[in-house]
Structure formats: C-alpha cells, structure tokens
Image (cartoon, rainbow, N blue to C red):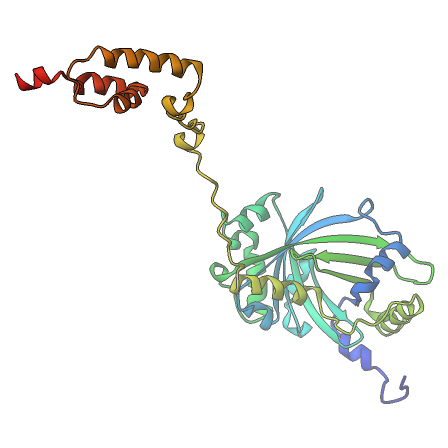
Length: 337
C-alpha cells in the first residue's frame, strides 16, 4: 500500500460532509452457505424483510442516481426511502437534518467511496402490499417532504405514474459481533424470484474512522477466508435489473391443457353389442330343432305355397322372418283370385 504525502488526507477528502461510512462487500455465491454456518446465521435468528423498488421499465431513476424503495419488516415497522448518489453534501440544505431518518453516508467498497443522501419515512402497515397489487398508486408510498428532498438534492422530481413495482425480494438480515472485528457486522441475504441469492456483509463506522474502517474490514474478510467477488455489484442493481427485464420480456403464458369435457354422452356406459342373430346363434341347439319342426309343420299346412320348403324354413327360424313369411306365404288360389 502506498503511503506518504501523496496519500495524506485522501480518504478524508472523499468522505467530507458525510455523517458516517458503511463499508460493504459481497460474498461469492459458492461461499454463502459456509459464511452462514461460520457465523451461526439461520432463519430462526434473522430479521425477515420484503423489499420493493420502484422505477421505470428502462430504469431511468437508477441511471439518474435515484433509488426509490419500500421495505416491509415482518413483525416490525414499514418504511419508504428515496436515495440519491453521488451527492455533494453542500447541496443538501440543513433543513433536511431535522428529520431523524435523513442522512448522508459514504457507501464504500474495495473499488470506490461514494457519498449518498437518503431520506426515510415510516408508513402504515399494509400500504406496500396494496401499492404492489395496483390498488393504490405508487405516490402513496412517498411523502411530499421526500419529493421536495429529491427536487433539492437531485434536481428533479419523480413521475410516479410511470413507475412500476420491482420485486419483492426476500431479505434476511442479521447483526452480530466477531472477536476479530472491532465493529459490529451486518449480513444481508437477498433472494430473487428466480431463487438467485446475493449476500452482503457490511460495517458502519464514524466518518473519522473511514480510512481505518475500510482497510480493517477488508483485512478481516481476507483473514476469515472470504474470497473477493469478481462479479461484485450492489444489491440494488442486481435486483432491479432482473425485475426490469421481466417487465420487458414477460414469460410466455403456456395455454393450460384442456380438460376433457365430461358430457352426458361421455358418462353414458358403452352399449352392449347386439347379440348375434338368434337363428345363427342357436342353430343346432334343442330350441332351434324344436322351432324347425314347428316351421316344417306350418309349411305342410300351406296349399299352393309360392316358396320352397328350404327357404320357408330358413326364414321361419328367424324371429323377424317368421312374421314376414306370414305375409308372403299365400296359396296360389288366393293369388289368382
């Protein structure tokens, strides 16, 4: 590390005007489970939150350095925050400092030190869900004071009617101490709708400790074996880019398979096949022989029949045929008049 006149006051100048510094680092995905186990972080000792961001599908706010979010803490308070970075602390009027949740902090990582101004306000429980479902407008989440703050610090307002809800993300948050770190540590694990996770660990320190806090915390992470995340990015960007992409390219809706319509015809049991012709099915049985004798006797009683005995017997042995023959078999005398 370079030291000397060239580095003197370098960090102090970068953080001037801020009230505190927050140093953050992301943990590579393959080390998340190990980090949770090492520090004893479980779902039984976390603070569960659900976070929504609000931006246009093209992320115009984020590109302008503005973050608008709402946070729902399970069993706790709900709030909304507007944040702007990078900020010149001199542009933030002193009147904003009267608000307890207004602050100017430095967001620090191994790559950069960025000053940011944020303004948080509490809100009624249930409001975030109603806004996310579309039954309330996005503007209902943010106060006039927050809007005025952005107008002063960021130099622009927000067209709330153009914003979409991006989220929610499930966030688990833990605060713990480690003997090797002189600062309390905060860990957050964010989970997107696709199951992807991002873990961030951070510390906060007074602004006068900025230089030693940055160097000390990075040394602590190196000592405990946390690898540098080569794909490191802020939680916010990682989240909003995913949800904004879903707005631009919504998943195709598969047409559900049509259920077979159960009609009266479909419910009707299959009709039993018609039995074979009685004459053919019973030919040679005792019943058939008895009937043939009767038919033979009937033919003998006919005079001048216009049908042969064989044809008469075949037709007579058929239930339909016997009726037909009763009409067709006429004595020749009747036919001649």
